[in-house]
Amino acid sequence: MAKTIIVCGYGPGISSAVAEKFGAEGFSVAIVARNAERLSAGEKALQAKGVKAAAFPCDLANPAAVRALVASVRAKLGPISVLQWTAYPTEAGDLLTADTAALDRVFGISVSGLLAAVQEALPDLKKDAESAVLVTNGGFGLFDAQVDAFAAQANFMGISLGNSAKHKLVRLLAHKLKPDNVYVGEVMVMGTVKGTAWDSGNATLEASVVANKFWEMYKLRSDNHAQIA
Image (cartoon, rainbow, N blue to C red; front, top):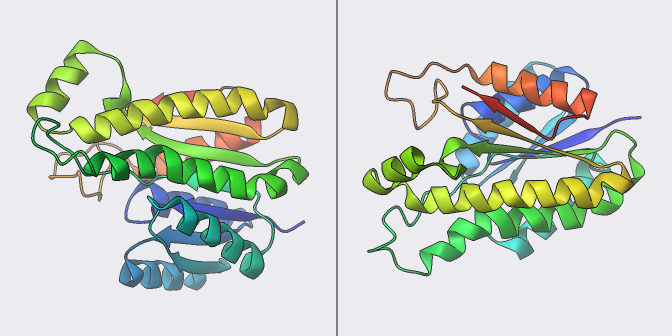
Protein backbone atom coordinates (compact mmCIF):
# COMPACT_ATOMS: atom_id res chain seq x y z
CA MET A 1 0.00 0.00 0.00
CA ALA A 2 1.27 3.49 -0.86
CA LYS A 3 2.46 5.51 2.12
CA THR A 4 2.64 9.25 2.70
CA ILE A 5 4.90 11.23 5.01
CA ILE A 6 4.35 14.86 6.00
CA VAL A 7 7.65 16.64 6.73
CA CYS A 8 6.86 19.76 8.77
CA GLY A 9 9.41 22.56 9.01
CA TYR A 10 11.06 21.85 5.66
CA GLY A 11 14.41 23.48 4.98
CA PRO A 12 18.07 22.65 4.51
CA GLY A 13 19.36 20.00 6.88
CA ILE A 14 17.42 17.34 8.75
CA SER A 15 13.99 17.87 7.18
CA SER A 16 15.41 17.78 3.66
CA ALA A 17 17.36 14.62 4.45
CA VAL A 18 14.27 12.97 5.97
CA ALA A 19 12.22 13.82 2.90
CA GLU A 20 14.88 12.32 0.63
CA LYS A 21 15.30 9.19 2.78
CA PHE A 22 11.62 8.34 3.07
CA GLY A 23 11.04 9.33 -0.55
CA ALA A 24 13.78 6.93 -1.63
CA GLU A 25 12.00 4.21 0.35
CA GLY A 26 8.85 4.71 -1.70
CA PHE A 27 6.90 7.25 0.33
CA SER A 28 4.95 10.10 -1.19
CA VAL A 29 6.33 13.21 0.49
CA ALA A 30 4.51 16.36 1.57
CA ILE A 31 6.92 19.14 2.52
CA VAL A 32 5.62 21.97 4.70
CA ALA A 33 6.97 25.39 5.69
CA ARG A 34 6.08 29.08 5.41
CA ASN A 35 8.70 29.86 2.75
CA ALA A 36 6.96 29.15 -0.56
CA GLU A 37 10.12 29.70 -2.63
CA ARG A 38 12.06 27.16 -0.58
CA LEU A 39 9.19 24.70 -0.81
CA SER A 40 8.99 25.03 -4.59
CA ALA A 41 12.72 24.34 -4.93
CA GLY A 42 12.46 21.37 -2.58
CA GLU A 43 9.50 19.92 -4.44
CA LYS A 44 11.35 20.12 -7.75
CA ALA A 45 14.53 18.61 -6.25
CA LEU A 46 12.61 15.64 -4.82
CA GLN A 47 10.68 15.08 -8.04
CA ALA A 48 13.96 15.12 -9.97
CA LYS A 49 15.02 12.15 -7.82
CA GLY A 50 11.88 10.23 -8.71
CA VAL A 51 9.98 11.04 -5.51
CA LYS A 52 6.27 11.81 -5.60
CA ALA A 53 6.43 15.11 -3.73
CA ALA A 54 4.16 18.11 -3.16
CA ALA A 55 4.67 21.39 -1.35
CA PHE A 56 2.19 22.81 1.17
CA PRO A 57 2.80 26.32 2.57
CA CYS A 58 1.56 26.59 6.16
CA ASP A 59 2.17 28.50 9.39
CA LEU A 60 2.89 25.59 11.71
CA ALA A 61 2.27 27.72 14.80
CA ASN A 62 -1.41 28.00 13.83
CA PRO A 63 -3.32 24.86 14.88
CA ALA A 64 -6.28 25.61 12.61
CA ALA A 65 -3.97 26.01 9.62
CA VAL A 66 -2.19 22.79 10.55
CA ARG A 67 -5.46 20.86 10.63
CA ALA A 68 -6.36 22.21 7.19
CA LEU A 69 -2.87 21.27 5.98
CA VAL A 70 -3.26 17.62 7.00
CA ALA A 71 -6.63 17.46 5.25
CA SER A 72 -5.07 18.95 2.10
CA VAL A 73 -2.22 16.42 2.11
CA ARG A 74 -4.69 13.56 2.56
CA ALA A 75 -6.78 14.79 -0.36
CA LYS A 76 -3.76 15.13 -2.67
CA LEU A 77 -1.41 12.31 -1.63
CA GLY A 78 -3.58 9.86 0.30
CA PRO A 79 -3.79 8.71 3.94
CA ILE A 80 -1.02 9.81 6.28
CA SER A 81 1.39 7.07 7.39
CA VAL A 82 4.12 9.16 9.02
CA LEU A 83 4.14 12.64 10.52
CA GLN A 84 7.62 14.12 10.87
CA TRP A 85 8.05 17.38 12.81
CA THR A 86 11.29 19.36 12.55
CA ALA A 87 9.84 22.87 12.95
CA TYR A 88 11.29 24.91 15.80
CA PRO A 89 10.67 28.41 17.24
CA THR A 90 13.08 31.34 17.12
CA GLU A 91 11.06 33.81 19.20
CA ALA A 92 11.52 34.93 22.82
CA GLY A 93 15.27 34.49 22.94
CA ASP A 94 15.55 36.69 26.03
CA LEU A 95 12.60 35.97 28.28
CA LEU A 96 13.17 39.15 30.31
CA THR A 97 12.60 41.44 27.34
CA ALA A 98 10.41 39.34 25.03
CA ASP A 99 6.79 40.21 24.44
CA THR A 100 4.93 37.44 26.24
CA ALA A 101 2.82 37.03 23.09
CA ALA A 102 5.97 35.63 21.47
CA LEU A 103 5.58 32.63 23.73
CA ASP A 104 2.36 31.83 21.89
CA ARG A 105 4.45 31.11 18.78
CA VAL A 106 7.06 29.21 20.80
CA PHE A 107 4.47 26.81 22.16
CA GLY A 108 2.41 27.00 18.99
CA ILE A 109 5.25 25.50 16.96
CA SER A 110 6.57 23.19 19.66
CA VAL A 111 3.32 21.89 21.14
CA SER A 112 0.00 23.16 19.76
CA GLY A 113 0.84 22.84 16.08
CA LEU A 114 2.41 19.43 16.52
CA LEU A 115 -0.53 18.18 18.59
CA ALA A 116 -3.04 19.52 16.06
CA ALA A 117 -1.22 17.63 13.30
CA VAL A 118 -1.27 14.41 15.32
CA GLN A 119 -4.97 14.77 16.14
CA GLU A 120 -5.93 15.48 12.53
CA ALA A 121 -3.82 12.62 11.15
CA LEU A 122 -4.83 10.15 13.87
CA PRO A 123 -7.64 8.38 11.96
CA ASP A 124 -5.12 7.55 9.21
CA LEU A 125 -2.35 6.64 11.64
CA LYS A 126 -4.57 4.20 13.52
CA LYS A 127 -5.40 2.34 10.31
CA ASP A 128 -1.75 1.88 9.27
CA ALA A 129 0.07 -0.92 11.08
CA GLU A 130 3.40 0.86 10.49
CA SER A 131 2.38 4.43 11.26
CA ALA A 132 4.61 6.81 13.20
CA VAL A 133 5.07 10.29 14.61
CA LEU A 134 8.75 11.24 14.35
CA VAL A 135 9.98 14.38 16.10
CA THR A 136 13.25 16.27 15.81
CA ASN A 137 14.32 17.93 19.04
CA GLY A 138 17.43 19.66 20.34
CA GLY A 139 19.67 19.59 23.37
CA PHE A 140 18.39 22.95 24.63
CA GLY A 141 15.40 21.00 25.92
CA LEU A 142 17.47 19.08 28.46
CA PHE A 143 17.22 19.85 32.15
CA ASP A 144 20.91 20.48 32.66
CA ALA A 145 22.65 23.33 34.49
CA GLN A 146 25.27 23.93 31.78
CA VAL A 147 22.68 23.84 29.01
CA ASP A 148 20.46 26.27 30.90
CA ALA A 149 23.35 28.66 31.58
CA PHE A 150 24.36 28.72 27.91
CA ALA A 151 20.78 29.17 26.71
CA ALA A 152 20.26 32.08 29.08
CA GLN A 153 23.54 33.74 28.14
CA ALA A 154 23.15 33.25 24.38
CA ASN A 155 19.44 34.21 24.34
CA PHE A 156 18.13 30.83 23.27
CA MET A 157 15.61 30.77 26.09
CA GLY A 158 12.46 30.54 23.97
CA ILE A 159 13.62 27.51 22.01
CA SER A 160 14.75 25.93 25.29
CA LEU A 161 11.23 26.18 26.69
CA GLY A 162 9.78 24.89 23.43
CA ASN A 163 12.14 21.93 23.24
CA SER A 164 11.47 20.94 26.85
CA ALA A 165 7.71 21.03 26.31
CA LYS A 166 8.05 19.12 23.05
CA HIS A 167 10.14 16.44 24.76
CA LYS A 168 7.41 15.89 27.37
CA LEU A 169 4.72 15.87 24.67
CA VAL A 170 6.58 13.15 22.77
CA ARG A 171 6.85 11.01 25.88
CA LEU A 172 3.16 11.40 26.69
CA LEU A 173 2.07 10.64 23.12
CA ALA A 174 4.32 7.58 23.00
CA HIS A 175 2.46 6.09 25.96
CA LYS A 176 -0.98 7.24 24.88
CA LEU A 177 -0.72 5.95 21.30
CA LYS A 178 1.09 2.68 21.96
CA PRO A 179 -2.17 0.69 22.36
CA ASP A 180 -3.17 1.92 18.89
CA ASN A 181 0.16 0.71 17.45
CA VAL A 182 1.14 4.27 16.50
CA TYR A 183 4.87 4.57 17.15
CA VAL A 184 6.13 7.91 18.51
CA GLY A 185 9.86 8.60 18.48
CA GLU A 186 12.18 11.53 19.04
CA VAL A 187 15.75 12.22 17.95
CA MET A 188 17.42 14.82 20.14
CA VAL A 189 20.24 16.47 18.21
CA MET A 190 23.06 17.46 20.55
CA GLY A 191 25.28 19.23 18.02
CA THR A 192 25.11 21.45 14.96
CA VAL A 193 23.99 20.05 11.61
CA LYS A 194 25.91 21.05 8.50
CA GLY A 195 24.17 23.38 6.09
CA THR A 196 21.56 24.67 8.53
CA ALA A 197 20.96 28.18 9.86
CA TRP A 198 22.86 27.15 12.98
CA ASP A 199 26.00 26.27 11.01
CA SER A 200 28.65 28.99 11.26
CA GLY A 201 31.24 26.79 9.57
CA ASN A 202 32.05 24.51 12.48
CA ALA A 203 29.16 22.04 12.26
CA THR A 204 30.07 18.37 12.58
CA LEU A 205 26.79 16.49 12.07
CA GLU A 206 25.52 15.23 8.73
CA ALA A 207 21.77 15.58 8.22
CA SER A 208 21.70 12.16 6.56
CA VAL A 209 22.84 10.55 9.83
CA VAL A 210 19.78 11.95 11.61
CA ALA A 211 17.49 10.93 8.75
CA ASN A 212 18.87 7.39 8.83
CA LYS A 213 18.28 7.25 12.59
CA PHE A 214 14.66 8.24 12.06
CA TRP A 215 14.28 5.49 9.45
CA GLU A 216 15.85 2.96 11.82
CA MET A 217 13.52 3.99 14.65
CA TYR A 218 10.53 3.85 12.32
CA LYS A 219 11.38 0.29 11.28
CA LEU A 220 12.43 -1.08 14.69
CA ARG A 221 9.68 0.71 16.67
CA SER A 222 11.32 0.04 20.03
CA ASP A 223 13.14 2.94 21.72
CA ASN A 224 11.20 6.21 21.74
CA HIS A 225 14.21 8.45 22.28
CA ALA A 226 17.64 8.74 20.71
CA GLN A 227 20.43 11.28 20.98
CA ILE A 228 22.91 12.15 18.24
CA ALA A 229 26.01 14.22 18.96
